[in-house]
Picture 1 (spheres, rainbow, N blue to C red):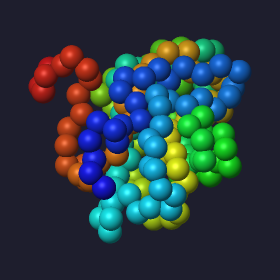
Picture 2: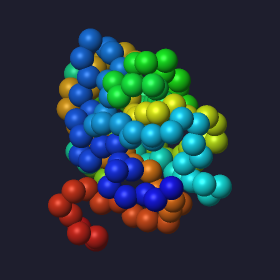
Picture 3: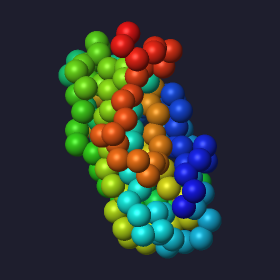
Picture 4: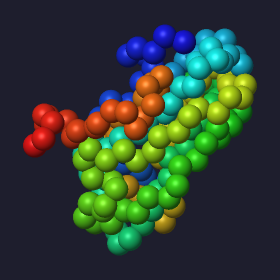
Length: 157
C-alpha cells in the first residue's frame, strides 16, 4: 500500500464527545476492496497523537480509542473493532499522557480481513471529552523511530 495524505484519519481533528457516545475522529479511509492486506506483507502502524491537550467535562474521567472497520463511511454498517487502546485519564485540566505532543497510541495493524472503511472512534468511559484534538494516521515507519512535536513548535522548544 502506498501511504500518503489519504492514509490519514485525522489531522488536528476534534476529540470532543457528547452523550457518552463513541464518536468518529476525523474521517475514515476508504480501502476500496474488502479484505485487502494494507501493507502487502509489510507491517503497517497506526499512530494517534495529541495536537491540543484532551480535557474532560467533569472530574476524573477516561476514554479509549478504537480502530474500527465497517461497510459504510459512518462506521456503523456491520462494524468490527479491530483494536482498542488502553484507557486514558481525563480531567478538567490536562493530564499526563494526553497533553500536546504526546503519542497516545501506536500499534501494528492486525492482519485480518478488513471491510471497505477503516476509522478511529473515541469512546468516553465515564465523562465526555470537552476539548482537545488528535492526529491519527497509518505509517510504514516504526512509531518509535520518529519524534512528535505539538503543532507550531520546532524541535527543542
